[in-house]
Amino acid sequence: MVPLKRRKVSWTGGASTSDSRDDASKFPQVVLFLLERKMGTSRRIFLTELGRKKGFRVDEVFTENVTHVISEKNSGDEVRGWLSSQGHGSTPAHLVDISWLTESLSAGCPAHILQRHRLTERQTSSRDEAAAFSMPVYACQRRTTLDHRNAVFTEALSLLAENAELSEDGGRAVAFRRAAATLKAFPEQVTDARQLRGCPCLGRHSLGVIQDILENGTSREVEATRRSERFQALKLLTGIFGVGTKTAAQWFREGIRNLPQLLQSGCALNGAQRAGVAHYDDLTQDVTKAEADVVGRIVEEAVGAELPGARVVLVGGFRRGKPSGHDVDFLITHPQEGREEGLIPKVVARLEARDFLLYHKSSRNSYAEANVAPARPARPARPASSMDHFERCLSIWKVPTPEPHSHRDDAAPRRGECRRWRAARVDLVVCPFSQFAFALLGWTGSKLFERELRRWAAHRKDMSLSSHALYDNKQREFLPAATEEEIFAHLALEYVPPSERNA
Ligand code: UTP
Ligand code: MN
Image (tube, rainbow, N blue to C red):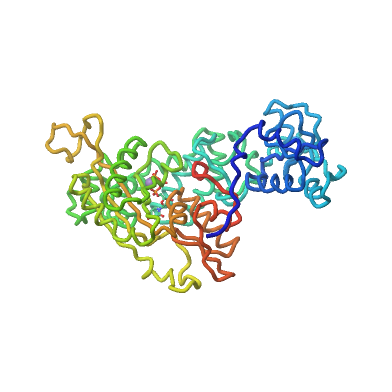
């Protein structure tokens, strides 16, 4: 496995731990503080360790003891803004650029502060310039939390993305998804399109939508799409479990717009689609975290009984902190590689015996046949794609509910009878232990975050990333990883925790 420097426990400590470093310092008059803003956590940690090794005192927390505030890619205004937000508006500390630190480190002592080390002020007279904001281009370089300030815009752009997906216009869909992701990561509420100058992935079309909303409160294009018969029908039809965009488009061409018309049409439905129709109402209701936890306990019990020592991890949107989702995803592995093989059929039999499954379709691991994993490490025959080859079970569950469930559909035992369950989609994925970190990263999402990781890997690092492995095309070798942190390190990306992958 790749050795990776771990954070010391003291990193989580506050001011008390940093003050105790006083004695160790070779330069008692100098107390450094590194601003994480724009520098990023891993670089700050790296530079702090390096500074301390060279005998500098580097504090974790800003206090009045600090003599030098060191930052990277920030203007004087930005640093002062940060300091006042922390209640230290008028510090006498020097505000210096990272170049001062690197020169001091190579000199082995604090360098004289020259003019070029001092942070320059940025013009704040013009609103445009003040707002010019630098955002990294790839969503995997950014931290995107669930709460953000631009929902009106992101919802509008996401609807256009969804419409493009339903129309199988993948390129356009991704463009809208990227634009929405930029707004999710934008730190302030957008009230003027000029604020977005310099932001990546905002094409003319997306900017036009934003401008329309700013001027009129809504976007005409978005509202027209939302109301269009085609969008509504395709959304409804693809909302049926087992129905993809191609099938839905075919049905639409045949004049089918809704469920009653579909059933009347006499169209042949496959098993998945029949289950999807039978449980349509339940499956179009989001699954809550509480329901996901109920499923999680049942999965853990079944997996534990069949394969003691196996690990079950809740992945997908719930791992990113979402309060609800369209399904529940679990990743399962065992520390002894090989023990996990063939686990799905056993777990499914156990779940069926307990009457939890309304529908399931399992597939075995096909990684070896997929021609992506040659016996001897060599360049994978195919570029890494979002398709993976794990042993897997796609299922619809009866999830026990505490309250009797109201129902309007045909899924109840008898009409008028109460049931204490709801139908919900559950995905079980089994992976070999050596691929666990990759599978975990791949199955945590969001989909755009994953796509951006793969794009970063391919375009910036000449590597192929999948949910199975990371391959270095230049070195012609697979890069192993036991943790997600190691994969980010291989990709020379700052680690982004799951809750900040909501791009
Ligand atoms: P989901 O489609 O379940 O998305 O896939 P989600 O983020 O959990 O959204 P909700 O909350 O259910 O609505 C979860 C992750 O698993 C990956 C996707 O790329 C996504 O990142 N995934 C999904 C795969 O790698 N392969 C698949 O076949 C399906
Ligand atoms: Mn999911």
